[in-house]
Image (cartoon, rainbow over the protein chains, first blue to last red):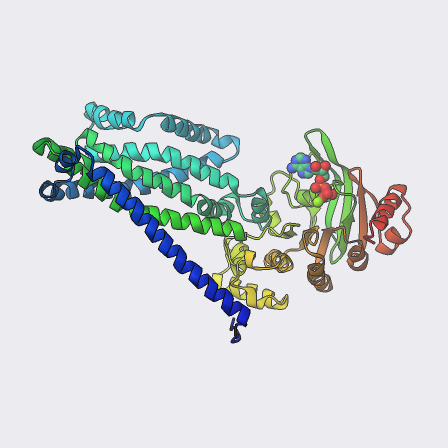
Length: 281
Length: 247
Ligand SMILES: Nc1ncnc2c1ncn2[C@@H]1O[C@H](COP(=O)(O)OP(=O)(O)O)[C@@H](O)[C@H]1O
Ligand SMILES: [Mg+2]
């Protein structure tokens, strides 16, 4: 669409000038209040009687530098685990959600199994699943036993798959039956209807909560270190044990936040887009 | 030639009898209008014909084939029947073009380019050629409903079922949708339409059926059913419609 050139009226120009002044004022007010609050916080913390001691044991630059390589190596494990487990849990969740929607007596066992799975793994604490899989299963001494890291990843996939399955299922059920009727009336089979009509709408609708669970998973992948592999937090713990200084934890925490920022930003962006679409539709 | 024959259709919802031994015959190239009070079972009848509801009794024949036989593949039957709904039911995540070409590509296994070319041709014919890449929520209600009709037509159906396709529309948008139905009639499409646009039923239908108590109580050419109804229940219904200013 090509807009014809438009000369704003005097009233519109006055309104715009007023809005510009208002914007400048708001920015100044925001800056002033931020500065005031920041000063207050800094004074309160650094003025505290124990501040020097705390700073030495939590924010020692030399120790931070020494611990960084180990913690980074641990973080690399977190990142790899996060990607594999997120992909695995999303796939498993989607599969289980689809199985639970199947109708007909033939699928009864499949439905029951899928329902049993979501009930069990949403109820079981992750730590217990982790211990059973990484400590119990290798005890069977079966041939071709995968390494502990894979078993730990499996525990994460199984646990998060249960949550994600329920999110997917909520999305599938939120698609109005009239959409199914329209698809079936066109001659699409049940499978084609799911694949081309229901799932695309369902996934779009639940993308924000799905991503939210992935952010939570990011924090939980570190728990595999309970079974041996060294993640960022475990690396920080080891460094702390060597130096009797907690700075490595702060390093690991800062890295975790940095890692989470892009993921959270994407989640917010997707949520915003979904909300906009809801408004329009 | 008879295209659709319903005999003794019965449909209940949890003890509530909606269709009670309903008979209906539709000849090829004819337009049948279903009229009747809200809740008289017009939508249910259309949904049964399209096998979206399971019958409790009776038979439905399409082109001489008993499609109410449970051994018949409903997907195959539905490909021959186009259905348009009151609330359009376009797929919101697909563009207009993809809405229309979905069934030709997925169900009829036509090459995508060919299906899209046909979709564009149909859109041009209904004056929506410029909207091919728009999404449903960017269209007016009348435009959405015309796209829904085109989507059903893209399957080249033998029979079209139209369920109150104008009742969700603003009054000034009704005309464009009805004009399209008129064109379909001129092309010889066989249609069964549930409607409360009595003026339109009178103009476009070859036969009007008045539904009440789960049956077709009265049917005939529109002039006779509207002008000289024989059944007291039809008369009463039409009186109410006239009182509401809808005839
Ligand atoms: N899925 C359903 N479950 C229960 N009752 C239904 C269902 N569909 C329709 N009905 C009932 O069947 C009756 C007929 O409905 P309908 O066919 O929509 O009538 P009409 O289209 O003529 O207004 C109504 O009383 C309605 O409440
Ligand atoms: Mg209805």
